[in-house]
Image 1 (tube, rainbow, N blue to C red):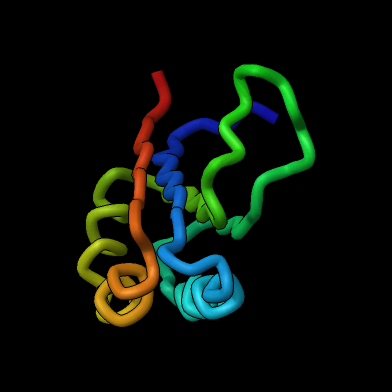
Image 2: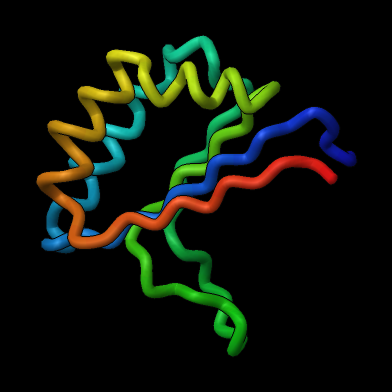
Amino acid sequence: MFLKNTFVHHVHFWLKDKADKQQLIDGLNTLIPITHIRDMHIGVPAETFRDVVDRSYDVSLLLLFDSPEAQEAYQIDPTHVLFATNVAKPLCARVVVLDNVNI
């Protein structure tokens, strides 16, 4: 399936303490009710060991939106703001976001 009219928001999280992984995952699950999100995937590094695969992160979040405007609305949604402030910022040493749109 070829995705059209899709804004992809892919976030990788590196924890300060690996013991907090489930707490981060639980926090990510609080984002599920946000209506601007079309599709959501929470994951951990796969058991793939090729040179080009970066397995250094602890948890990833992949979100698909119908438009850049939907993604912007997600950014200011109170549920997302609470997650970022109360979960991601305290638990994570590093967060990398990769946003992309169709060509």
